[in-house]
Amino acid sequence: GIQVEQSPPDLILQEGANSTLRCNFSDSVNNLQWFHQNPWGQLINLFYIPSGTKQNGRLSATTVATERYSLLYISSSQTTDSGVYFCAVLTGGFKTIFGAGTRLFVKA
Amino acid sequence: GAVVSQHPSWVICKSGTSVKIECRSLDFQATTMFWYRQFPKQSLMLMATSNEGSKATYEQGVEKDKFLINHASLTLSTLTVTSAHPEDSSFYICSATGTGELFFGEGSRLTVL
Image: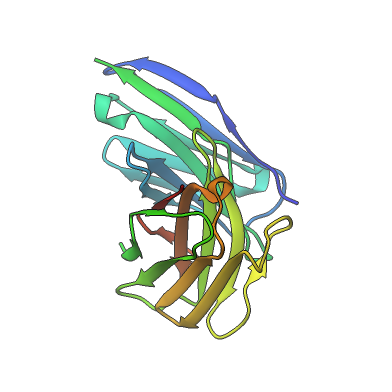
C-alpha cells in the first residue's frame, strides 16, 4: 500500500520563527490534506491540496503531485501553532492514509 | 467548511457492555464515512470505510464483529463497540466526505473500566 512519511517528527521553534514541514507519499493519490490536531484531539482542516499552492494567512502549502511530496509552511510561528500536524492522502481505492505527524512546540 | 458532528465526546463504560458512537454530517451529504482509532501520541489508524447503504469495508486486523459500523443514511454513520474491554479504550474519530475533501468529527474518547 501507499506509504506516507512526514518530517521532521518533532520540531521546537522560538516564537516568530518560520518552518517547513514535509510529507512524502509513495504513489499517486487522489487527494492530499493537511490537518492540525489541537490538544483536545480535534482535527482542524488546514488545506485540501491535491496539487498546486494555497495560502491562508501565515500558513501556505504546496503539493507537487508528480514528485509525490507536499510542503506546509508556517511563518511567524505563534504559541497557538503548537500541536501535531498531519498530512493524509486519499487513495484510488478510497482509503485514507495518515502520516505519523510532526509534533510542533512553539516557545514563547 | 463543512461540519461533522460526533458524539458522545466522552464515554466511560463497564467491561462487557456495548457503546454506540454517532457521526453526522450536518450540512452536506456524505457518500463515504471513515472511522479511525488513535492511541496516545500516535497517528490515526483507519479502521473501516463505509458507504451509505452498503456494508463497511474493514481494514486488516479490525474485528468486524467487535466494531459494528452502520451507514444508514447520507448523513449518519454509527460505530458500536460490542462487549467492550479495557483494551478497546481509545480515541475514536470519524470523517466524512462527499466531494473528496475530508471533514472530521470532534472525536470520542472511550474508557472501558
